[in-house]
Structures are given as structure tokens and as C-alpha cells.
Amino acid sequence: MAHEPFMTEDRIEIRSMARDFVAKEVLPVANELDPILGEIPMSLREKMAEAGFFGMLIPEELGGLGWGVSEYAIVIEELARGWMSVASIVARGQQFTTGFSEQQRAEYLPRMATGEFLSAFALSEAEAGSDVANISCRAVPDPSGDGGWRISGQKMWCTFADGSDYLQVFARTAPVDAAHRSRGITCFLMPKERGTLPEGVTGTPVRKIGYHGWKTWELAFNDARVEPGMIVGQEGEGFKVAMGDLVVARIHTAARAIGLARAALEDSIEYAGIRTQFGQPIGHNQAIRFKIAQMATSVEAARSLLQSVCTGYDAGAPRGELNLQAAMVKLHATEMAEQVTSEGIQIHGGAGYTTDFAVERYWRDARLTKIFEGTSEIQQKIISDSLLGRP
Image (cartoon, rainbow, N blue to C red; front, side, top):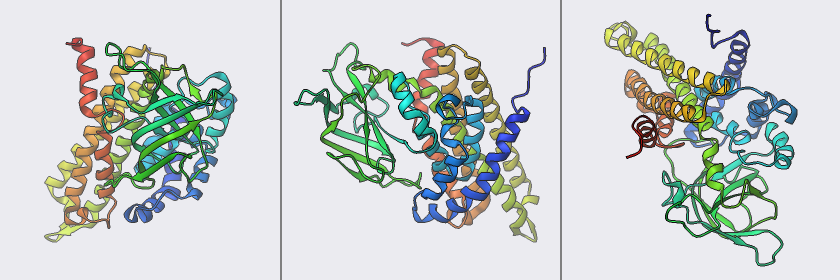
């Protein structure tokens, strides 16, 4: 029995729609604002909401498009080809909802689908990056006894803390259990006014080299209040919430990496046709042609692996299998993206090392994909532990 091709007519139509949107709405904005560290404009966010991008994974009955991760990955690649930050902001409305109660889903997901209730993820700390279980930020019951909580401590790498509509904060609500360090962490929602930080929270933007379009923050929680009823999942089970969406998050990052690599490839092909040296376009030189051939092959191989993982996810493959495959595609695609975007700079020569061409943006952003959602080294640990068992 022949397998149905991944790119069905519906998916080709979705890709065409997203590609047209990027060419018209995203690339011009990215090329203008990224070099000056400008932020994603609200007008673009509104157009993305109209296109349904914030609700791709949200069920139709809750206002979303009800797509699978296969369609999601197709759109993410296209958005990242224009500006990785734009491909990232759409996840703030449809990821990290593991553990939501039915009441929370009914209340929040329709607003997420329209881009009206977007999140910032406050998980990492200075001493709790890859070692998430080492969280020290504390939450204690509010002294009033009304069921609220008070959070104190530091958080790092909280992108979109100011522009979001709520913070999703992970804090320790029980002492560390040496045998089970991941226990005792609770996930809280802190709704706030867009453009501000919650009362009791102060922050300093991180001076990052890429991922422009929005700010990434170091946050200080100073007895910040969480209202009653704002726990996600069960008290003390926040680690499960944090880990629950990592398969989709890693698929998302792989798609972003592929989009960046494809951008470098396409820009390099164009540049090779117009840049002349020694009386001919550099694209006539075998060295350049072979670079482009290898870049194209690498992009295609990563995309094929991603499509396989997405197909398994949408078909309901076992969680253990998906964890392994998501780690593999995240590792492969992000390592590939750094290499391909670097080659893109090489093809552009000195021009590639300026902000006059977008290829440097692709390279800077690709470098980050090897770090967030679990570093390449963490992915290798997941893969090797799965194949060899934990030592």
C-alpha cells in the first residue's frame, strides 16, 4: 500500500498562503526593524491573528484552526524564513497549555487563538537552565489565607515578559526532595496588562546578539502576588507541565531552524547570480556551486526528518518514541541550520558580515536554536539514554 505524500493538496495550499504572507508582511518588516533592534509591530501581530496563526493547534470548538503539528510545522518554517521571532511569537498562544483544566481551556484558549492572551514563559534561572529541577524561586501561600500565593526569586531568559498578557511562572512550593528533585515545583499563571510587568516584578532586558523583535528579560519577583485559582495542573507537579509540551516545542524549533537555513540558501542562490568576480557571476564557480548543492541537500534532509516526526505525532505514536524522534530532529535541524547559515555568509563574502544583507540575521538566530528548548548536548543525552539506557 503506497504511503500518502506528506505534502497533500491542503498542505500545499497552507504553505502557499503562509509563503505569500511572509513575502508581503514579514520580510519587509524584518529587514527594516531587525538591524535597529526594533520590535514586532502590533499591526503585524494583528494580521497574524487574522490569518489564524495564533490558533493553529487550538481545537476548532475553542476558536482555533484545529490543525495537526504537520500543518503547524509547515507554517512555522515559512514564518522563520522571514523572521524567526515572528515564527516564535505564534507559539505564545498555543503551547505550554499542558495541565490546563477544562475551565482554564474554555476561558483562555479562545483568547489565545485570536492573539489576545499570549504568554511569557518564566522557567529558567541562573542556576536552573538545562537543570530545570534546580529551580529555587519560591512560592508561599498568601498570608491572607484567600488561596493566593506570593512568589519571590529570580528568573532568566523570559522572552516577551513585557509584551505578553500573562506570565507562566514556575516556582518551588515544597522543599527539595534529594531523591526526586523535580517534585515540589508548581506552575502559576500571572495575568497582567500588556506592555508592563506584574506588580512586584521588576526586570532588566538581556543584551542578546540576536532573536530581535522582542525583549528577553531577567526578572526579579519580590513577594509578587498570584491570585487564587491560577495554578496550572496540580500543586507540586509543575515539572510535568514544563516538560509536557517539549515534543511540540522541539518540532517547532526544528521547523524554525529549517526556515532559517532555507532563507540562507535562497538568498545565497540569488546573490551567486548577481555578484560578479573575475568577469563572471560567482555562481559559475564550482566552489560556490558545490556549497549551494550541499546546503540544499542538508535543508531537504532535515525537512524530511521533520515531516516523519510530525506524521508520527499526528498519528498518535507512543510518547517514548516521540521524545526520541523530537530530540533527533531538533538536534539535526539546528546543527544543520548553523552550518548552512554560516556557509551563506561565506558565499556573500565581506557583504555577509554586514547588516546590509539578511544572511547575518539568519546566522545569529540559527545559533540560538542549538541552545533553547534543550541544548544540542541535552538532545544527545536524550538520544543516547534512549538507545543505550541511562548509565
